[in-house]
Amino acid sequence: MEEISPTTIWACLGIALIVIEIFSSTFFLLFFGISALVVALIRVIGLDHLAAELTIFALIGMAGTLVFRKKILKSFASKQEVNIDKDKVITLSEDIAAHQSGSIQYRGSPWSALNDSDYDLKKGDS
Image (spheres, rainbow, N blue to C red):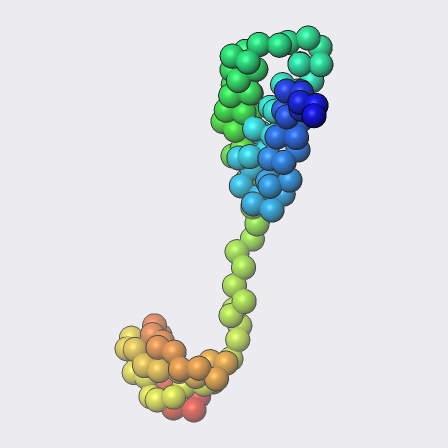
């Protein structure tokens, strides 16, 4: 039975980390996946020293994470606030005096609400 070469192990590790990253989207494993692929390429060129391989793997992975992770996360972040309830109509379940709390019906469920206006709101108002 043939042994698996360290180059193949590094390449498989790199691909596995990148595939896992696709499903986690933390942009942490991505850089270590890339660094494992770099180590595999360096092994093809001629590096054959485990301590050097591990050092290169760790340094490239950490450097990539520290330098690029925040930038990548920021580029994928939503630029606008999402509020699915904005401008929706609700029905008051009871009278709510100005600056007081009361209950409302929204999407068939009871909720508590604060009347932050200077006007009293009447039951049944929308």
